[in-house]
Length: 296
Image (cartoon, rainbow, N blue to C red; front, side):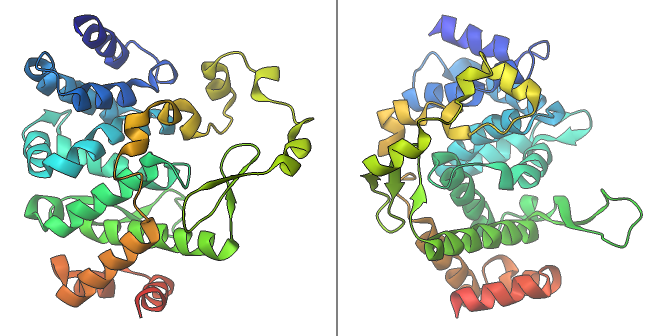
């Protein structure tokens, strides 16, 4: 275990390139899940190192792997995570603000409809919203792009809970659109039934892929792909398929359409975290229409 912790610490060191450390988040999550007593004394320092790298990270895939460390912890230890992050300051910013800003900005980059990353990210954000913690309400993140501005990167700044509603609504719409589109591909030669998440083999499709140039024909290492700027499937870089514990995780079994519909219906019925007021003031008209159509 000591060697693994030393290896993780090395990957988190600022001298390491982000492309060389894209697996570190998954490794840390597995260490935490193992529940090893050897990890407990160094866990606060480890999480602080994750936050420090997150504050300066630029590569989207690297940011995802760091965010997922906290997203997994939020599933079972949300209050502890919030307390920890609000208690640390990095370059004048508190840890909670660093996490939420990075998470919100890259929420849509969590790739793979069937990925544990997607489901864990969305459910963790929903849990944060439902908590109504005032420390979350005090943090502002990027909202909508200001189109009439001469600055193409100028955004409104809105409270985190409002942004969470926007992101989860977009996630729900993606799930609804995917369901309407019918079965989707998951890997080569297999189809996935949207209702059951079961893979159906298709020998006929195999022929269509025989002559397709594989990534190995052009790249030898993951860093080559990242340096070229090509899109990397997150599912292929986190060993999800190789870890039976992850496949058995209840999060993976979550039907996200059902989960998000229930989330929005509950928030509307109970006006959770001033849901009605947030929707009225911060959702665009198209977003309000999508929400109404989804939960009517």
